Image (cartoon, rainbow, N blue to C red; front, side, top):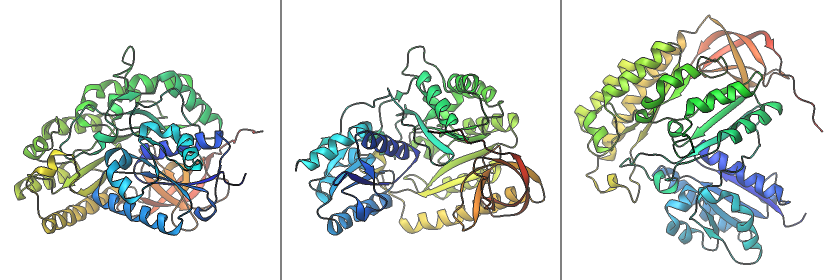
Length: 443
């Protein structure tokens, strides 16, 4: 239908990806169609991220470009930046409809307001947790199980955009996983701002472990669950029952638990509610249960209060715990946060420290990955690779293995011999198919 097509761009984390799925489902349910390119779209939706200054600058530049190149197109700016910095969005994209993450389902209203020559600004309210969009990405799918956190970190602007804890009902999540698996999905990613606080707002306070067990008990099939980010202090509250739930072969032995700093004084300045020793104990408990587990972490370099001694403490912790995956970010000032008003570490110092820590992380990662060389492993093929002619498989701890592309392998379990590695993935050759994906009949 002329005048009823949309194009969507998504910035940020898996929560933003889920919100884009919400908007796509709402639009398509109202008769809109997704354009194959931005040039063919009548409406452009930009789903934003607010975590870092460089991302914000990139989004602002993109909005300016879109207004210049497509002056007659309706524009919707959604997501965390719209909620956290509405004044900025109004300055760079006047006339655009604006939606907070909690109002993603109102995208049809936002577009229809533009059709009338008006706009919708919906930045308040709470998330509608009565439905979950069923839009797989190939043989993977992401489900937001909760939004919000119980923390108050000094550096975080996301708490402005996604403050209130709001969990989806277990029944709804179990039902969504079952439907996705019946559609051929083999990897379901359970995501949230802090998945460890799942259920604290629900009647009976079901925990993350309760949710995982309910899915495993009620949804049959060969699929894998990947549990999303958990803050250390909340993970410590539920780790024992969660480790029990991880015994099931259908749960990746993968834990994303950001430490942020290896120095207690900096953690206190960040208003993180744990100590380095607390994190060590949590790490040790996980590795005692699952020595092969991948523990991914985040580290902020150059947060206010980080001196050379504090940075060296972080280096020592990284060398000691030997994380399988580390995301290193230089601290950037975010408005409306306490850290923005603190004395700042010079940019040149942050660059030197982050470069050094990245080299150490790469050395450790390479050593860990090299330990797989020559081994024969099983992997589930989950996605197309970035490299031409490649596919990505996942081991049971979520470590990626790059294999040659062969037809019909997406969603299948394959046997692979590891021939080479980088610091972040493995490279292998396919020895055979263990289990071929049987796609359900449709139509």
